Image 1 (spheres, rainbow, N blue to C red):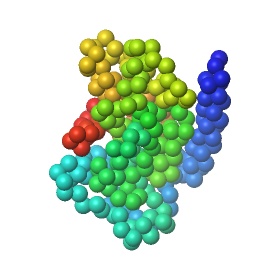
Image 2: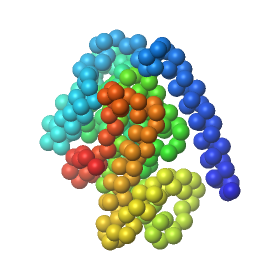
Image 3: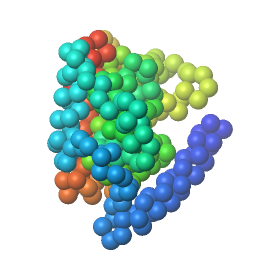
Image 4: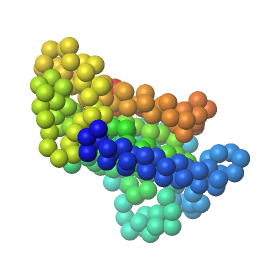
Length: 244
């Protein structure tokens, strides 16, 4: 076992234990229902979608405003800042890439306290700390939608394609970024070279959605209709998000 792999396994193990403790604490707050929602003034949550479908519609409506150049820039003033200082209740979790061009509050035209953002290069969810972060928002804030958001021309996926198809080696800890993406690239490597990147980006999103759906913290509320997990891709040139 290499030094890097050993260190990552050690860190992952510690994070998994910490995540379990966090989830247990959140569950204990919720009593017999198993879900705990933060004590938040009602005014901080308005306007909050009531169902996962309403939450998705809210995001897509905001993206439409962004694409058309008519953003409302809602809930970003000093009043909202003071209100959300008392507590938060984000209705949606966005798992997206660290890319500087993909800013969820901007592309969905949302404000302070609306979205719980988890960002990592390549928008993957293999690390326990990423999963735990999303679990925290579901268990503690009652978030009702998880969106895995990839984007065109993703550098992390592009590097993974080079690793898988050309045997390229990466410096530092970059192998930890590409390893979770490798299965998606391997699934599409029989396609023509000029199609592999776009196909791998979408496959990476869909595989992440599938993996999240198998986690009990998410699968149980999904089955009961309290939560929805969806995959979308952000188009850098147009600003539009499209389903994967």
